View 1 (cartoon, helix red, strand yellow):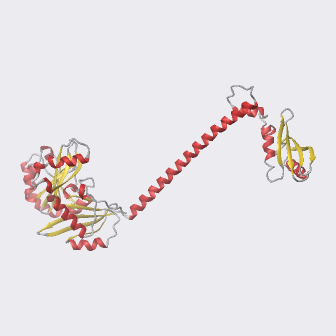
View 2 (spheres, rainbow, N blue to C red; view 1 turned 30 degrees about the horizontal axis):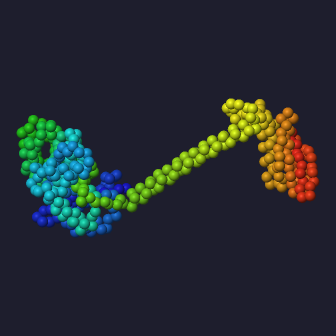
View 3 (tube, helix red, strand yellow; view 1 turned 90 degrees about the vertical axis):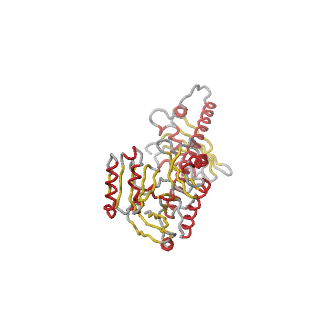
Length: 413
């Protein structure tokens, strides 16, 4: 089961503050959680056998979320154009900023996250000091549970405002009423305020002020979990990943996932090889069948040159070989097959085969280096199997015996 590690980085009066939580994504069970200084999480991570992924959030105050209409669909061209498209919205030089892009919204605008380049590098260095590697670093604002309109989450003295899938901002709690008043008419139509019961009383006055200043009433929802845990459980894996461009990080998957991935790849490869083998075998057999059909027709034409326009070559062969009507056992193929299968293992060599269709008689010309007992034993074998067989001629030579055997039917065998 995958257990994901969630971190949120912050800084207060020069001191780094880290919140952490190890959450089982299937059962929803929190394995451990905490908040403290950098050295505290360092020891935990060193002893942690993580089976999932590590997700890191920066506080919304450090990241500007905006958007711009950029006609191009190529990411490289979009990244080149982004700094100049949002330059007027920045308080810093574009050369000092790092830009990350997300998906387009319903209006075709590209979502953009902007952060001071040195500040981002600072946080990455601190993570490295703690022995933490993550391929996904985003802003906490984008993990506020969102439906539509505007979602607001009270996080102590901070307020996280999410106005779209990839848009939002962070403000101090005493600016909440003013900020809601500055929302667009569309966003004001559906404003949801999420607050934990521990902070519910402190926000009642602000909610009353907001409702008094606008037509639409703010819907207040109690958070089942604390602010940070709510962000972890609703973490937006489709949010904007700040680790793009020069800050992109490649993280190898955990061993369990890697093993399953390798096994899956091997299974697919084996299946593909099996299919390829079957296809190759099928193509080969089809090719050989074509070659044999050509050879069969060529041989038939040589033996029966007067037959023209032969469509069913098998039927014509069987007809000439006596395999007509119902009794295949008394025809040439039946007699020959029933007899020839007893030749292997003996010292007899088959020199010639003749078949009298009218009499239904098969004649085999055989030769052996032994005496005529080999021919007699072969006759006895056929007779025991119910065949009507007899010796036609026997000629004794200096070093071999030649003879003929007549077989008229297979009888009851």
